[in-house]
Length: 351
Image (spheres, rainbow, N blue to C red):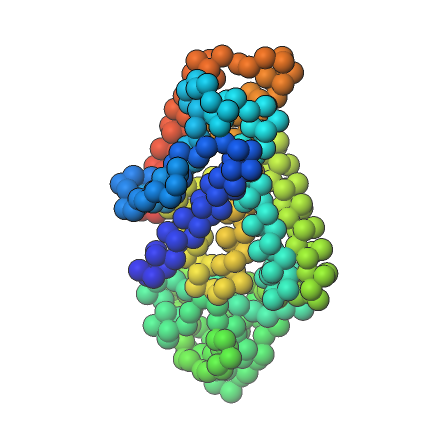
């Protein structure tokens, strides 16, 4: 468990690093002085300076920032952010989200090369994988783990090699109160365990206390994997904005929920237990979400700053510094309130 928490913190720091480092590289290319490069929020656990830039690492992995020279004040200096053209500033602002989108695309391309996990419907080829083991259940007592693949079930002379989830459910229901010999595959290892099929299990647990999914790992040759990864990314972007538009229009959106760090950790823990393919897929989803959310035209987000730069470009004169600062402060306050509300929901769901 402690290793999973460490892996989660490192993953968040890595995604933030990609976002902020993309801003950093774009600023350097635009000849803007970078005063400080932050990953994470205080308390500060590490800090050092190389040439003109200070590099700092914070303990809390919920954000980061690149402090650009002249970004938050008027400075008469050619290396100042605000002295650059709207086009150059827009490239620096958009670079963070672009970095996250590129990372997501690369991860999806890799997965289509080594095996992208995909849910399968009935009659489609695939294998039956355990995705959850309930705490204190017979399955947990038998040391069954998420990620195990069910190969065979045996009880009192009856034996099946299940092809569908329904096969397992029907076999279990026929053998309630009995011990079932389950043949499992974990990695390259095939082994057997005895599991009691409870007659009266707790609600939403089932006789053995497992949740199942029919899945398969889809893989392609190198160049096709790249094509499929790019196509997969664009499809996710389309689905993301389609869901967002439906939320604005107050239409019902199935399977969509907003979660904070605790909720994300819950998804991470499940993917971590299922294996590297699922974990890479989730990291890709998170990176894609970070990139797209940052592009929303809302004050304090990169998308809000891009909107202000677009207005400046159309007006052919800069927005007053005080006005821009006020807009971003209000936006940041609203975002902070939303984050607190989401965090409270997370805690309630966790408890």
